Image (cartoon, rainbow, N blue to C red; front, side, top):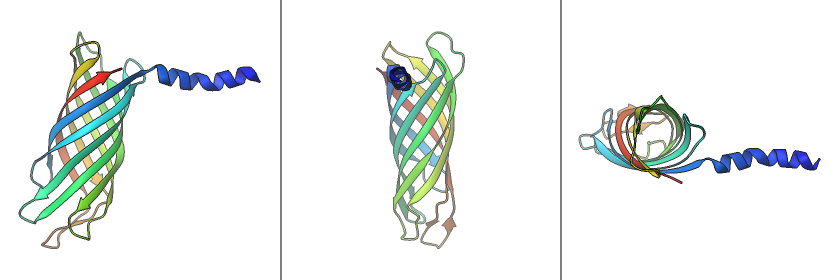
Length: 172
């Protein structure tokens, strides 16, 4: 029975030995129906294998529209799975998808406070050194199950946006 206890601990030890990553992200978004805006993000992840990376991404952005006087802050938490394609040298192309939740604050009292959020992305990772990389990506994000009411009484059930991201990844 003692050997079974050690077998149960092996997956935990293997996960702990994987490379931990921290990403700092800056970007611009163009949400449909809103002014373009900038956002900041922080990602914490683990390199599961040579080709797969699993991460938790936290993002903060504003949804503004001066015409309808909508001013909403959106805070997202996403679980992303990234697959790195065959790279050459220090250039690593990747694709991925994520699922999470967005909390909305501000706006009309008719604004729902939570939204299911999904994204799909593609980009390149460039190796700077053994412990740091630069990330460039394009991401399509969609928030669903949200109701936003503007001053004209218009209801929106979803928000989609294209996001352009630059980031710096640190590997430990």
